[in-house]
Amino acid sequence: MGVVTQSTTEAPLAGTAALADLVGRGGVAVLSGAGLSTESGIPDYRGPTGRARRAEPMTYQRFVGSAEARRRYWARSHVGWRQIGQARPNAGHQAVAALERHGLVTGIVTQNVDGLHQAAGARQVIELHGGLDRVVCLSCRERSSRAELDHRLREANPDWAATGLINPDGDAVLTDEQVAGFRVVDCTGCGGLLKPDVIFFGENVPRPRVEECFATVTAARALLVLGSSLVIKSGLRFVARAAALGIPIAIVNQGPTGGDTHATLALDAPLGPTLTGLAGHLGAQ
Image 1 (spheres, rainbow, N blue to C red):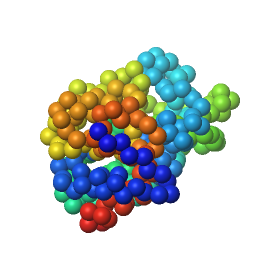
Image 2 (cartoon, rainbow, N blue to C red; image 1 turned 90 degrees about the vertical axis):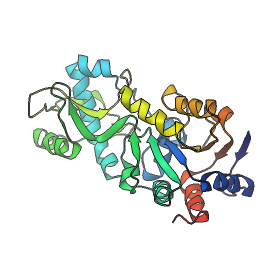
Image 3 (tube, rainbow, N blue to C red; image 1 turned 30 degrees about the horizontal axis):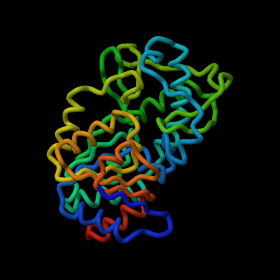
Image 4 (cartoon, rainbow, N blue to C red; image 1 turned 180 degrees about the horizontal axis):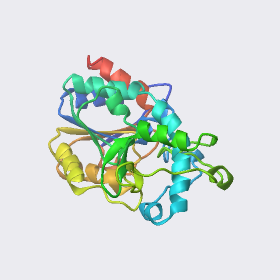
């Protein structure tokens, strides 16, 4: 194991060269987390921007069990979507997409729900936790676009306006007074409850999706972890699988991660500049 620390002002040649050597051989599966999207203005959970987080995340049980909880969630999410929906891929997303086009990245498992990998042009993307750009009815399971729901919520709340600190999972911190009076809309087809097509805390990722992620990692020649603290099992299990199979693991993140002990290489570095440099070095731009 070789763990290399990279400062934000001086890139160590040993670390970046080792990363380029690992990725340059191809067959790379990417596991990305919230830290990859911070340069797009989306805060992360545990990194530097995540320290400003104020609200507890919504659980699936509270969402389905309480009309008031749903009102609070959709009011906060309605505000948060303005920022998430307008976010654009940053240099890190662009570099990953370029590495995929160059034939070096064979699959991307993302823990993010912002859709920025796809917006950057990446094709082989598995959204482990779903996507905020879709909405699902909990009764008829019909899926619709978040843009459509946003329009319906604006029509249902013409005089409502609020602002608040944006959280990583796409909602905003609002007071009870701000939430009061917000009107929630239901499924246009069956009148059922609408939920963002993402995995809430207390909800299980569909098993076929998990197996697809494991298959992507198992088939890889190397695993590249980007912007994930690997504190929770959701992402760490794929690192553990790669380690058990003897697949080399490289981690690029700002701060230590729960997978560093498994890593062949770990770089503490900003994602955008590091990945842009990597893609350029490998001729993938």
